[in-house]
Amino acid sequence: MNNSITNQKALHDKTIAEILAGLNAGEFTSVEITQHFLDRIKQLDGTYNSYITVNEASALAQAEAADKRRAEGDVPALCGVPIAHKDIFCTNGVRTSCGSKMLDNFVPPYDATVVENFANAGAVVLGKTNMDQFAMGSSNETSFYGPVKNPWDTNTVPGGSSGGSAAAVAAHLTPGATATDTGGSIRQPAALCGITGLKPTYGRVSRWGMIAFASSLDQGGPMARTAEDCALMLNVMASFDPKDSTSIDREVPNYTANLNQPLAGLKVGIPKEYFKEGLNPGTEQAVRDALAELEKQGVTLISISLPHTKLAVPAYYVIAPAEASANLSRFDGVRYGHRCDDPKDLRDMYMRTRAEGFGDEVKRRILVGAYCLSAGYYDAYYRKAQQVRRLIKQDFVDAFEQVDVIMGPTSPSPAFEFGAKGDDPVAMYLEDIYTIATNLAGLPGMSVPCGLVDDKPVGLQIIGNYFDESRMLNVAHQFQQATHWHQQTPAGIASEAKDTEGAE
Amino acid sequence: MTIERADIEKLAELARIELNEATIAETTQSIADVLALVDQLQAADTEGVEPMAHPTDAVQRLRADEVTETNHREEFQAIAPATEAGLYLVPKVID
Image (cartoon, rainbow over all chains, first blue to last red; front, side, top):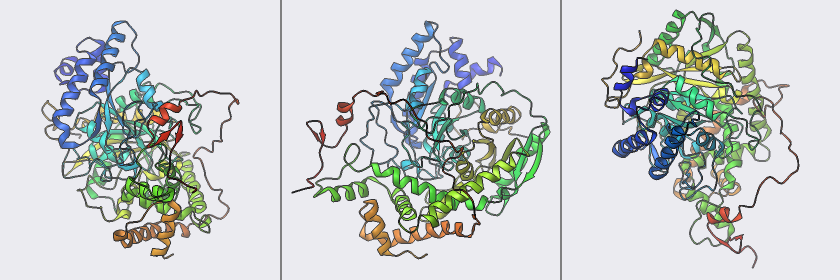
């Protein structure tokens, strides 16, 4: 990028890579850019509701410390870069609500490994972002703190469950944010808010201190405006963690190393099941245009089949609720979190604490999970779903014998209006129809902006093989070198004139 | 599989969640809808397929049996709803 153009950008319009360049060149300090974001959050977030907690004093203290480190020549990877954490990651001394009334008063006595990794890298934490309660939802409407508004159209949802992180990045209220993805909760909001998001391979990012929803599916990952920024964040976020028994002991590569590799010769699988009825025609067109753009860069598109795709949502809605019903049994009003007033006995305390502390969707999933695990139904539901899960994984294993990456839409349509799916949980669950299978298989997936339909962003999904995050990032970065979709911003967000050129 | 009010009441008891009398019919219906969705699994041919518990079939790691954690009782109890003399307090269980 041309430096004179970079310098004209307002601080909040800069990418993480540009912020690092500016800090390194002494154009501004971490305290200056941190204060700038804090002021901007104060000014604008009343509209978007993307933050639950903003840490003004601690952010400025961290920024000051980062500036001091830099002056002393000690410059870790994200030294002085402001970010935000999804309110599912425990932060020592800072309330961590998981979007729920149950944890409205919960101040953890420790940091999640992910939070520690960013702190060690010198990042500055602006605050904690809004989310669907206990990460259960695809619209952010289940948050105890009220829904997040999509910066592209405040009558529409930002997606979920990481809707606060996605909206904060889209509204330039942070250059990057952490998020989590159990069935699409990074990729779907990234698509609906027009930003870039990456769910790593299961086990790549530590789950220690990340409040558990469905432990065999949950995975943390970065959200930012570009693939390059996601790579910079993933470099810090990914680690082997002995404290997480499912963390994979494998070297973390430098995710920025392969960004500039040309794509010629790359084999891209296009699953025919991802282009069937239910897919918005405008979304389909945008995705097909993106694939045509990649063909110009020399990739080969290969039609593939993932035959068990239609069983992914049903399998997920056995496995995720079953694991959730077990995980959420810890919220009992004894050791932390909400406790009901004046319990008359222990049973009454459990029953009312949980009735008051959990929202409707969380209760629904706990009850579904309890049903699937109850005596007499285990084989018909949980065991069956775990068998189907292996079939779904095998579909991908077979496909990756022929192709390097798989691509398709991230979600079936652009952002929908608040309340549009409110009474119908099954309609909401189908929002994740293209993303859920990768969680069941444990594969990494990304969403990158690839077009606009009725002025609403569309996401292109890139699914990689196990531990092939570098290749996904390379593909996404090359796509972003050739297109302008990731630079599109909602009306009134960027201080520069809106880039209306778009992709070809 | 049909699900009725009595089933929901039993599940709520197992999960220790008090039901709201006013919305119990709605809750029953929405759970029936979710179970209808997951019932699509029954059509899948899974004969001989090993259930998959972990995406990369990893197994539990073992570590040396050494003390690695220090005592954090005071920090943990500082955020509890009710404590006394280092103990968590709950309503009386035995008279």
